[in-house]
Amino acid sequence: MRFWLLPSPLTTPSVALATSLRSPGHEAVVAEAGGSSVHAVFGGFVDAADGADVVVPHSNAGRFGPGVAEAVRATLVCVDSLLPGDALERAWCSSCGTES
Image 1 (tube, rainbow, N blue to C red):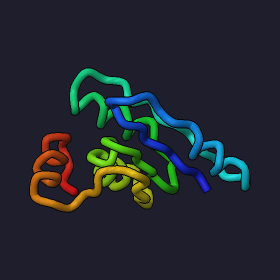
Image 2 (cartoon, one colour):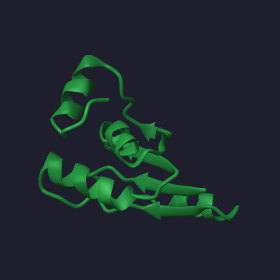
Image 3 (tube, helix red, strand yellow):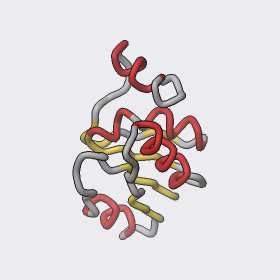
Image 4 (tube, rainbow, N blue to C red):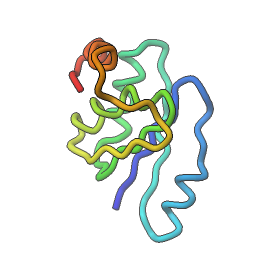
């Protein structure tokens, strides 16, 4: 199983979850959250997650999770992240160029 972990663009990535996932033999990659705009961060996450089976956003990266998972056709599993679904969230995601 290939997991792509999306760290919050506002904090440093935590590698503890990636380490835990790797121990049973899964591939776990912590994506770069680089970019100076919402569009740049979203695009970077989509590029980084290409080939993922599961996209795992953490913290504020939950705002990008639905769009990234949809773009790369992966399953979304939110871990200690903002959850998609309310009207404000859909409006925020639509500013990334995708709807949740």
